Length: 285
Length: 307
Image (tube, rainbow over the protein chains, first blue to last red):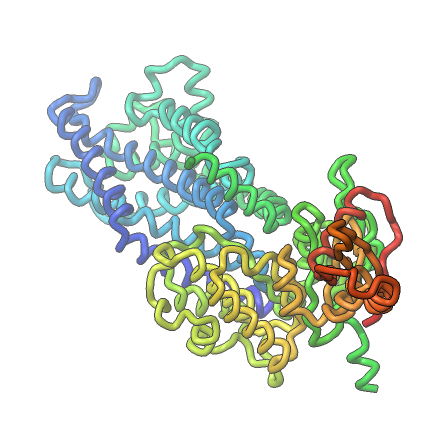
């Protein structure tokens, strides 16, 4: 790494931190965090007395790890994707293109910002859940350790997808069609709101091709007692497979994302930003 | 020898062509910018000013032609080259939660590894804020700045790395007269005190006249005139209109020699000549005529104007 790159990465880390603290102070983002927390807790609260079939576990205990997984995957994909599409259009990306080693700084900042951005969500869900529901947090240091590595691997597996999505989507208006809908579909079949075992075989196969299912499984292995593994596919937590699948997604993503990002960056120019501004103007009026 | 070095242009373009599909925007642009010079690229909307400047900034690949900026082909330039070139971009809603001070400090940081004893980089942020007149807004959120204030910030971002060469695309669009004057002072200061070479685009003739050491007129995909505002003006003087009446009848005569014409007019008719009016075509008239001629594709030959 050249001196310029090292320097840019340091600036990028500072950028990510600055954006994170700005987000914490922003009423808009505070409202979003609060909404995520309240909605999740309300959902769990209404189902708090249901016992999950075939186990002696209550619904919140089983659902919470899956919800965390979905939020991780969803935030880490949609967060960078929408940020990148917006910042391509508003000129943030172009500003960095005009700087020496600017893109390295920008991408570093994005990675740190969206990673840190998970913390408030985790806090607003985990802390009240621990107080409201019984037996929803992992037992012991081993459980927390598992939750931590699943979280880190899950982010590594999904964040490059978000970056690439943001790099290839043509405009902000396309974000919901090509970003939101596929992300929701994948989340829906990944065993978060109902067990994947209840779905048809081919849907199970599709779900297992995506990382969200594995983050959910890994989270359940951290949060639930070992006996609960019996109801999973194959009757086990499949920890080795979880690591393999997530690492494979992470490696593929980290190889592909820089290529895709560079292609997008090369197309950035002032007239493109101006065109986006004019289009946005038409949308507003 | 130093004289020879300064003769080396900082921007040298030969035969630059750009087409989108079958549509040719640039059909062969030749231009030079010399060290410390302020050059205005003037032309109607859609003439290809932005395309030209984006090729020079390294943001766009030309279809053909030879381009050298600070001695390097911008499409293959590295980050050290980037550090020497400033680009003023038109923003509209980026970094809404940042303050001007924080953003300038952050973006300026990228230039620090490229600081040299002769040219310490980046520029001091407080001084820069003062230079562009943003001291009072330094700690406000950028989202709350007016359009004109935001453009001042764009200019500050463009020069925070103390560039040797600065590109500005329509820099004063949306400026009020006061901001415009401040901006013109700033460009003069950059070129006089910092020795920065400046290439800017505008469709405002008055601005080109006030700012530029040299004006290039881009029309019909090529440079159709190249010279100082004075030189262009002298060329313009060649077109004057003499209007008068005689016995209540109106006459108009276009001439490139109004003085001898008027003398002969009086020699011939004496006091019969009334309501005499000699109107020298303005730079604007010539510019418009020049653009109209070249946009219609009638004359491919560039007009050479003495410097």
